[in-house]
Image 1 (cartoon, rainbow, N blue to C red):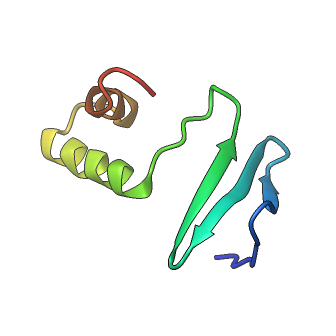
Image 2 (image 1 turned 135 degrees about the vertical axis):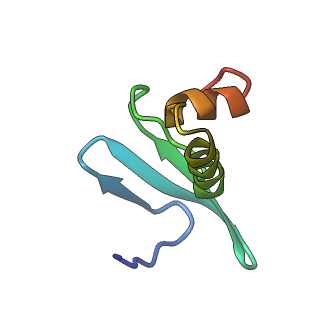
Length: 75
């Protein structure tokens, strides 16, 4: 794991096409802005983990279908 220090307004770039910017810092909470191509899905890790567990239980639904279902059909 790479650990970086960033301040409000600073950003980092992943793979030349994903930019993550620190928008706000308040106590132990930060707000991030993520700019990525539309074809790259971006989900909170806890939601993604929930979908993976549900998929293991069902054994036949794809991660993307399950995420779309949880999000009301939206990505």
